[in-house]
Image (cartoon, rainbow, N blue to C red; front, top):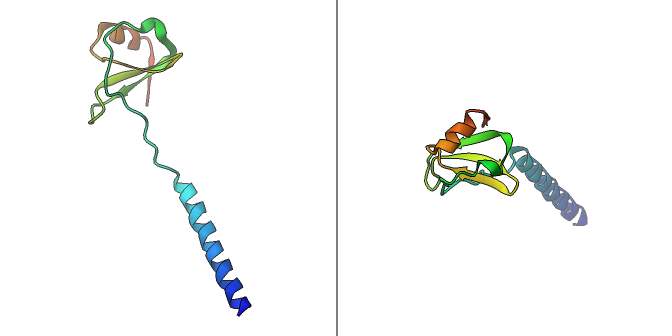
Length: 94
């Protein structure tokens, strides 16, 4: 009887290991946070780095240009003149 219990326990343990390792291969499907609001104020002095990212509108996200700042991401209005001036000198990333 104890051999059967041991066999079943080992079988269940190996199944758990297989399932957990296969889940790790796919990885979590973590989405990037999106901009739900943008600024029109000229924040160009706050922007760091030489790259920006475009975000398309898909509810609840809005059209935005995303810059990096010392404090995190900055969501800016793509139609703002300062944004257009700044992106013309920067590299777009995905």
